[in-house]
Image (cartoon, rainbow, N blue to C red; front, side, top):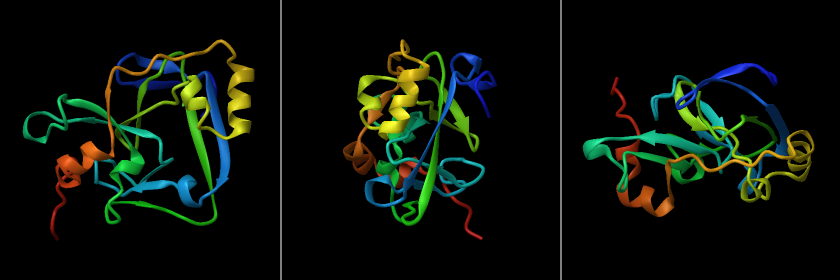
Length: 170
């Protein structure tokens, strides 16, 4: 994937990628990636994301989380050690897609956020990645996606079993 390629977004249809950013980091502690095993959220394959990467969850009725049917949850809040876990050790290549606006895109068939370019998020990124984004897209500042963010407390109160997809018992 490269700048200019079009990616299907949830709210804006196909949109051109402005930047594909990459960082290689030691996969230790707070930088260790989160693995969401295939099927846990309806994802086709294992999805490996950074701990702060937010997953878009849409749940109605009894499966609703919090006060709204649409929420964004940081991957680290979904860790249960069985279906979602941290992969520590070695190195990890993190890739982030940047669009003209903060978008919900699809990875392994499930909705996740694109990189939101804001002072808050840039402050969390590795210095070299922040420098690249500022150099290549100096005027880009995103407004957050309309989705409500759910923290660890909400996930624990609701229960991960209510969030995860039921699995077939073979």
